[in-house]
Image (cartoon, rainbow over all chains, first blue to last red; front, side, top):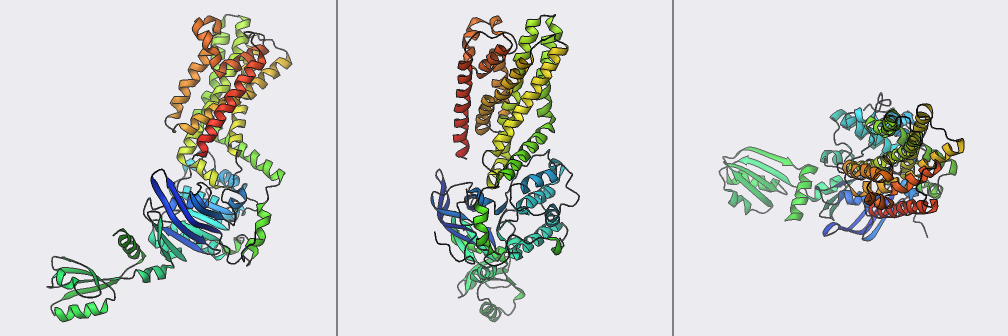
Length: 302
Length: 277
């Protein structure tokens, strides 16, 4: 089998994947690629198919049609998963084992594991090694799981909502560790509910909805594609009147306050000022990724 | 989380361009045998530690059979040597059942429900490593219970057995865990974590009683005696009793065949169930 050039070889990929559970379609023709040194954030509402995509890439599920590959192999092959690290949403690790024991066990699954000291430093496990897992706080348990995910020097790292349950400081520590891994060439697939997490970490963002990839690109591209600004002002103008102007996408009027979604926003502001000299409290706001995400999912649902 | 000192962090596998592909064929190969054995030993060790540190599992499992034996086989036995020998063998079989049925049935149901089974499947854990570790755990528990019973029997119960008999009895106990591991595996694959203890108790205690592990079958109603060959614990009980010369006289090969059939059947059922996810 001819191998593609190593630089372009995706470390994880889904090609035309379909997966259904009974009557429920989880993935409906999804293509996804993950390259070296790249962090891809997979976004979507609950039930959008994120977890199924991860499960297929880890060989936990088998696609009904299409293919899933991990490091150029079937994800069910042990050799493929030996090059991957994984942190799932729930780990259910034995409460009675100590952190050091869990880490020792996980390191033993890999051929050239990271040193214990490095795992402790990267995951922030200082002082926890002798503690039993069941006695840790939720955030500490998440850090143990993260340490287990990175202990095998993975080329691909799957993080399924990794910062759930972490406080702000721990989350920033986790982000630094992830950035460091990515800088070293690790490919990371991150699913998250925290959009600021995707915004801070992701090179690329993919949005799943109802099992279909509805948007994919860099954070900036995604924001540009769905860019819109919101104009807020107090005005005597009627919402219906403003809604008929070009560039205006949506208007909400309540108690004399207008909220206008428009792109570009400048001509609308000019027209507003011209039409209502008494207008005040003018405010123009740019959408963050969160708003772009909402706009995407709303637009697709409509 | 503290900011890690970047100098302490070893580079992630092969940062050099193109090295990823070069590393592939190397990593494709199976682990060397010695590393593989070390992995399995670690798996067994941590499985053992995990359950030994769980008093609700370890204490009743390890202590109930010797306690029952002490009570019914020695204290309330009024010096009947045949009964002391019979019960030593039969409580050994009773002791085989609990770690296998609870370890697999309840343990697996909980692990499945809480996501550990999924995590282990996602990690590069060789298939069967967990199964092996838990089977060895059940065997070690059965062995410990067998040794405890023999100690009680020979010191307090006046049981006199030749060394080969003692060894054979322990071997029956250790290998006898397999059919119950398979049954436990099937229960763990089917039932949820909250339901599993009830299901295990429901089959564990009546099956022990109906197989003549607590009181000899001859003392039970004839209908129950006739039904006894339906229970795998009856066949294992007969093998253990044969070692001490108190079985019903059936063929050992028949009992072994029945136990093998149970093992294979439940293992296959459980395997099919678990593969469906």
